[in-house]
Image 1: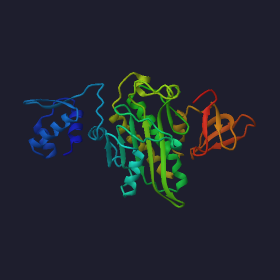
Image 2: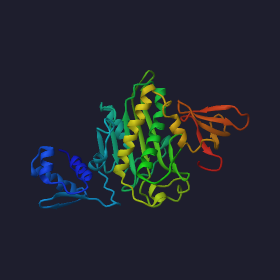
Image 3: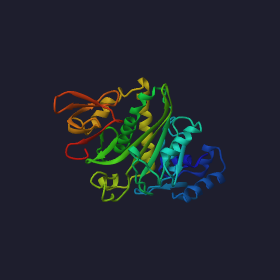
Image 4: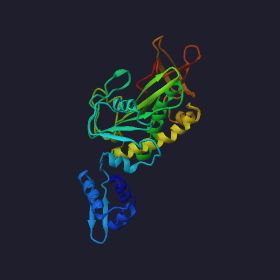
Length: 330
């Protein structure tokens, strides 16, 4: 019997569950159940106990208990997150996930942290990672495809984060190609994908996601480009539940990707959420900037851009260039 199992059963019941029922269900003693309940209380849960009734979980709507037990109590995946590592503080969840991969951990391992001290964005940029507010998570995979096929996994994660956010909040999200989740044209999630591979095969891929969840305000230098779920919706989000739903949707979307090892089965859904679609964009290509209209993505995850100067169609690869809106970030 694990603490998350007791927690899940109490949460699902929504009322009192007798100690005897818990004993019989898990095949343990009353003392074992009592110890599990006491530990949950130490972790911050409120559990009422009454004679002849048993135990009842008291949940506050704005509660945000963020622990390994809490995350696992919401999980319903079959293989993603079966190995879950939780840190109150760590340097970088991506580095932690890569360390697990180097030690031979199976695909699907997940690292989650309440705070990062060395978070990173694209091109080595720093990522602000305060405690008690946001989600920092990394997923390790060992896809059976050639390295060039794995680049779209960052899009798979973007789609999964968006679907999870829209399930647990009232917010309408979009994706700024290739992998930024935006609400009202401001970023709430960044994704960083890293790979260890040789020419003919992949050792592992690590996908890290940083989601701005319960921050009340953003730093002044980024508040025109970044926001949080709380700022946009005015409601506290249970981060543990959001993590579990991201993993749920990722497992679903990854199964579609793995059928052909490409993005063909997800293109239509992704394009529905693409905020750049049919908008004027500026392509910041090292070989020369140009403007055009984004028409969506293809099965390789490339952005299809119709050039403004001559009408030619360009296929833009995420690893080479950046794309901005003509009048701002989106």
